[in-house]
Picture 1: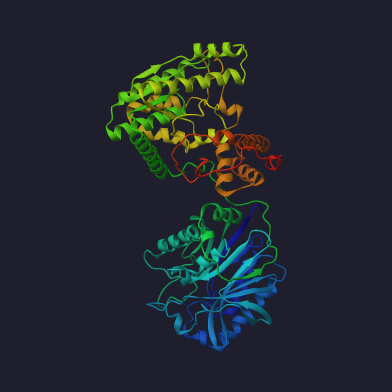
Picture 2: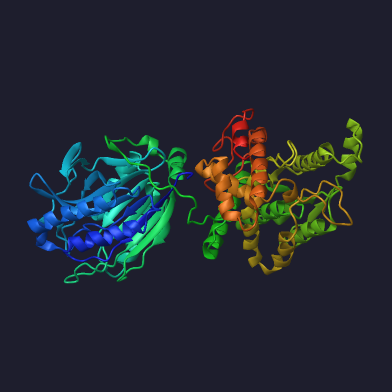
Length: 629
């Protein structure tokens, strides 16, 4: 379903050296995870990892094969892919292996590459590395099966996984690097990692960082409490990570069996590799593709998604992120003004979110350089829809920052404009609105010429995505400061400045004012034109934008994710309606994005046509629109 697969990690109750009981425990766990696409068990789980020299004993070797046969018989009609660990003898050599089974068949066997042989580990005493084993087959349980480190397992949709075992992850160049470069978007690690002070946290960092570096999902399963405690202890650490984020983790030191699950998005990871990485520049190696049977399909997913993907959920992280963004924007502005040899910044302030944030950044830049704030030319330009509330907020903000505001009404200019083109001033259509918007930009541009200044654009990335700006009106400036910042993040950035007590009250007033271009006449001093009632909630549009641009999600998948995430706020029809608006506006408004001014990139998503997002402005988008119906 939309590239989601349920990956599960099972830590069984281990009966050291009792392969029959281990097989029964594994079978019970398999039967309880039939909705999972993949179920991963620990390293050498058929016998136990801490067997010592008993690994050489023929009884143990034979009993592992018998146990595997029992598991094969029990999974004959089970679509879940199961990966178990066992010791396998081949050409008089003993290998530590991961065995992949499905529907009673062995799909492949992967030997461990790197064998730890230091301190409490002495695997080279028993096992041989499988590092050079490629293009080979072995006979196991009367089946002729692929054997080697060159195996990647795939279904006919998005599943593509490879296997590494324990120490393989801890090396400088883990096998998962090559597996990922050859298409594996999911890595499975059968492990036996003992517990030491501080090791748990380091292990988590290894798993999450490798999932980020390889742009993959990573499932990790370590041996549990049934292992020998003669020299060390194993805590049963299980983890599932996706692209740097930990989705699930088991309880360590648990005496009971455990299963954890994570619904990983393998379609998303494939797209990320195409659009945001250097995967295409790395050489691939010859890997064999092993075809899997169809795995269980998900009807629902047990996973949450951020409603505000551009805004960090953690308050500490959000505060740091906001500070970093302010630094990026203020220093970008400083560089632009210094290189242009310009001292004055010209900005239109409306009392709305975008112009407020832009003015705060300008003020911060001037404070960093100890520049004279009299060179900040802040202009309020009331029109037919301007309310006293927003106008007063703009003036109060300027005064609180120590900036002297100017007021230039655009009403007479707009009336002259209507008369010039023969437009009835009582007809409140798009012409009525855009004449005002263009007059405001004209005032700013003319003022900049007069004082030798730089016009700072205030439009944000969400407005740019939707084309919610007037072509050659607020669409235009000399430096588009907010162009890399989405609307849902602007509020948090303004909150960041509330730490200054002198700004707190006016910023609260601005944050509590509805988003509006204020181009239609006010009604008894109240705003009559609320943007989100016209084009839809920005929280939805930013969610749509994030998943479309970041992960290449289709409208159908975006609709699914939005329903899953916002189902407690909007019904399906409402989400579908605004998704249709988003798709139509996003595609039809590219012509505006093609000619936007320079502006600094802030995050990984940007609509700058020269550096990031490029597409034809006259393309046929009907197939995207049809997916929203």
